[in-house]
Image (tube, rainbow, N blue to C red; front, side):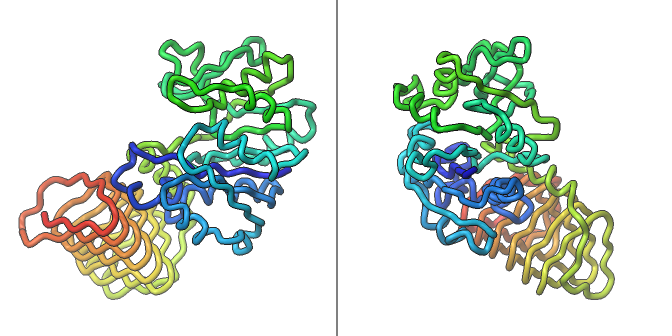
Length: 356
């Protein structure tokens, strides 16, 4: 089988973070979210992968992944450019896929249990398609499947009145027949070629489309709060490690990951789960709380931070409490005030300067 990772879209709900790069490169627990998709494909034995690029800084994607060798896979890049829908992006992979079955994985989706079992099911079946489903409290925000007696009878994209609570997870498995279904599509009311309509055409042609309801968690990271929740879920499985250096009196509780070159200064309190990247300087007298991911080359002096994601090359020097925040690469958050308010919520882009 071959793999396809969709890396397009404009990520408008994640602006300003997505003004300077694609949303799929935003890190979850210090790893770009699309890398989780790539690793899931690799673990399922799929090493021939196409990444479909959008029009938001595609060069950052190619720079990070290269030819795939450092990840143990082979990567081909396909340019979609302007977002015209998932089905349109899938249609661009026709030559890459050839006659082989393939997996389509949305690069902004995370699955706790991976896809190994799904791939095995599809490989041994005679189905023309297979979709992953997950029960959600807000199905109108997703593509939704109506299932009767274990069989998919209807798919609807973001319905006002959902026929079920089973949302389509961003992982699809197809054979070559999906391209015939895509060829007959017309843009939806959203101006896109909908993958739900393409799969519905397979069903209408009496071709078998299997479904599987995932048992572990699934996150579609379209909003800042989704990214923070995904960060929490991934960090919950963190295995502790310390490759850095602790200076003086440091209090550590819970699962903590500290990378090479990082210095934790005296008087700091670290409470996990949390991960700190390479060549960081934390402290003195600084609190870093649970569910926080700190990227590389970050300096944090004084104050408190928890349940947040801090990207590379950021400086935070303020005696304040920062919570539930996404702080973009190269940002500076400083304060000359002494008083500590209860908290600040920040969602800021790259190279931002804030004085609180």
